[in-house]
Length: 65
Image (cartoon, rainbow, N blue to C red; front, side):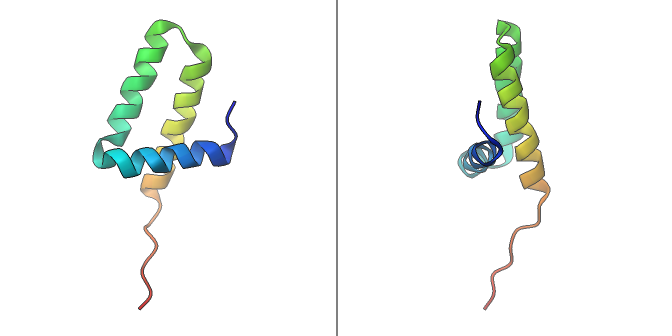
C-alpha cells in the first residue's frame, strides 16, 4: 500500500500529464476497477482521486519577482 506522500506524488503527476481531464480519468479508472471487483485497487484510486481534488483546490504558488 502506498503511503500519503506517494499518493500525493501520483496525483500531482496525473494532474501534470492530463490537466483538466484528470478527475474524469481517475474516476473512469476507479469505476473500471470496481467493475472488476478489485477492492484494493479501487481504494488506492479513491485515495488518488481525493488527493487530486485537494491539489486542484489549493491555490497555485505565486511567483515572486
